[in-house]
Image 1: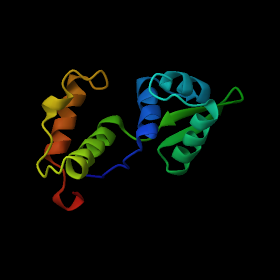
Image 2: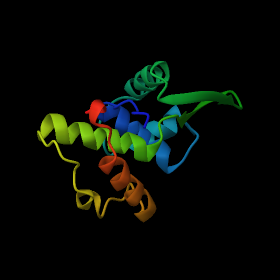
Image 3: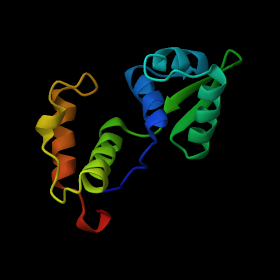
Length: 127
């Protein structure tokens, strides 16, 4: 299993916008994340630039406008984030129960099953 990068909270907010619809311009991403991030448009652009350097997003020019797409896969990234949270924050060595994700608007039933499997199969040496 390839362990994806764990985004920061702000990077995750921008990725969540892209996972719902992509590609998007920086302005569209900024507007989509406005409910979670109370910051300036320039902060969104700087964060997207950092994410580009980290290869979390890709950019292409469409009609003279930069549009961004997520390079990080949603379920794998969420599994890495959840695993890290369970281990580092909650000090839980066992996989997190998938029931904690039930009712999430971010994942559907199929993705929930994938997430559960990824968390169950997490490599011991990647803990």
